[in-house]
Length: 67
Image 1: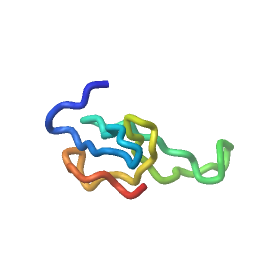
Image 2: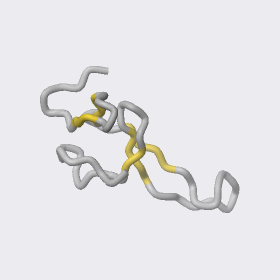
Image 3: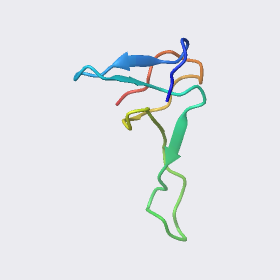
């Protein structure tokens, strides 16, 4: 995956480059698991290296959410 000049990116503690895609890779795990009674859960954003963060304030924000 190539991260453009404006993509939110950073170096991980082990020196690798990580970042967030322009439109984001978002996941949501239903509260109560996958069942008839499940409810929407919290949305999270996945980085290029697979780390999970809270959502950014906006899609264009350069700061990643909390890990």
